[in-house]
Length: 51
Image (cartoon, rainbow, N blue to C red):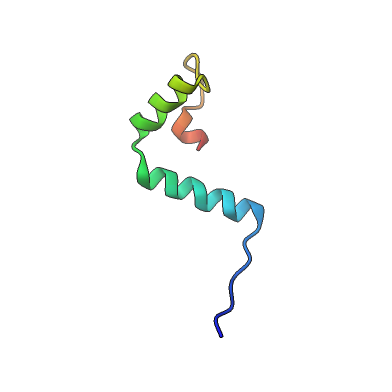
């Protein structure tokens, strides 16, 4: 019998962010953030750092 590990919310978010970083480059994340309106101007934190 295989036991399934239950992940907490923080672990799920961290896992999801890691998978996004594997699929998209920093430039692609920045472009998507601008296209969707998440980023409108340059700030201290870049969108890929936010992810």
